Length: 66
Image (cartoon, rainbow, N blue to C red):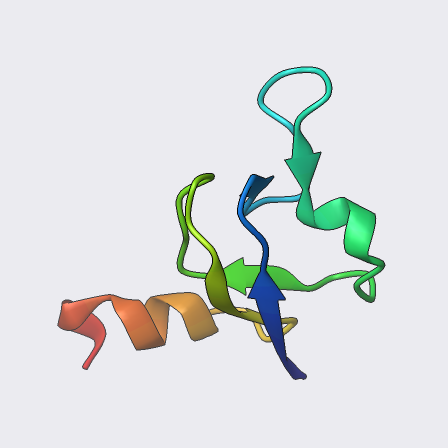
């Protein structure tokens, strides 16, 4: 599964907060088992791809995997 999501400004690009009260992807109701491909800073907004396919992040983002 591959999901496209527009990450809002102020949302951490992970499912668990680094500190209490921090907004994360967990509040958006994604299906279990998905994870973000790549990262966007907390202060950035934009397209996030999420997937449940193991290894996809590595294959897409690691130059050595090409």
